[in-house]
Image (tube, rainbow, N blue to C red; front, side, top):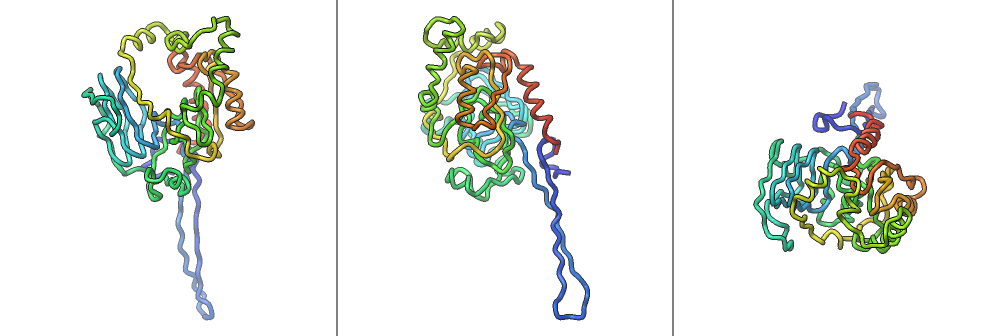
Length: 321
């Protein structure tokens, strides 16, 4: 059984028994001394958690936001919501949790309430899932070689950034309508590098839409139910820092782990054939096949049940810890 600190998680666990016997040489004594220790190696997939950030996590949300599932940051969490933010599960950070904007962020401070339904955030004490030393070297100053980390992530499903590094505990991460990076590429460079604009224009022509600029209302929310759409647009426009779009992917290549790609069949922003090509080119033929689900770019809002069923299927394939 896994230790209590991992209770409730799913993953792969292997128990190893180490035994060492010793006997005195050049002696008539035949007694043998023996010591033994049992250790357990565990691989825990990321997608059991709501959010994971390897770098700082900034939340400047305007609409009311409720996050269900564990949240972890390997650095500092900055919480400055405008109307309110609720965490239904545990929140952990390796450095700190602050209620001010990140230094350098021009967004003014907001005083929206932050509610923790579980105990207050924990700092620096997490299950002993060690970060590989070579990864700590990639991100100097962010992850000490002796640090520990919990490994969640939903954020990396749709826009994988430096948080999707080769941790010991990564296994079969699912990417939903993702932006898959290349070495040294930033999210801001990704669009031209993949030919997203041309692919979107070709898709518009195929489905009979006029040649036009992308409309975030119609082309993001075209299949989202009206009540959900109305609720989203009843809020002020969200404020988002441009900082992440200038940060480059720090690794030499994609982590050497099985990767699952899930794409909406009616995604106008990242068309299905475009996703298949990018996955094939950037993840390799063995993981390049994109699993198709109903819905557009916001499939989690338009067709939440099929997406949840697919992720539950992936989770069920893992042995419980």
